[in-house]
Structure formats: C-alpha cells, structure tokens
Length: 81
Figure 1 (tube, rainbow, N blue to C red):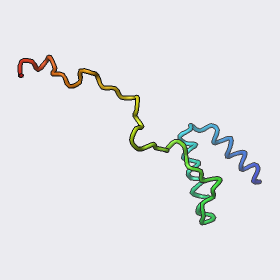
Figure 2 (spheres, rainbow, N blue to C red):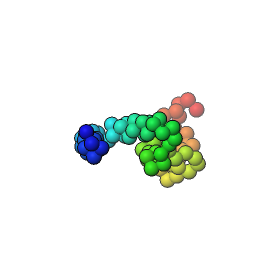
Figure 3 (cartoon, rainbow, N blue to C red):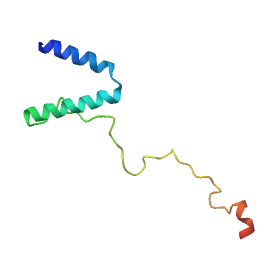
C-alpha cells in the first residue's frame, strides 16, 4: 500500500469515528511519532484543547450569586431559637 493510500484510508476511517475516539487515535499517533524518533514533533504534539483547565481565582466570577438574606435566620428553625 502506498503512503497516499494509507493516509487516505486512515482519514476515511477517522472521519467515521466519534470525536472522543478521534482524540484517542490522535494520542496514539502522537505516541507512535514520539517513540519512532525519540523526540516530540511540535507540529503533531500541539496541546489538546479539550483537556485545558483554567485554574485560579476569579474563574467563577459572575456565575455564583448569594442572596441578600443569606445570613438571616431561617423561618423553619424559629421554634429552636
């Protein structure tokens, strides 16, 4: 099988897979590329965007609101106070 036919076959099979399996196939190809050359290939090993996490202060700003009466006593516990 020529290289062009192999690439076309791989592309046609990958296009039929769900996105999650396409990502797994990409990781496996990256693994093979790394171990065949013993060095990462920058054009192949771009960081995946699906696993990027944004950590730190302020990432939930505007998404969480606290009611003005948050600290007020609850009516349900009036008998116990």
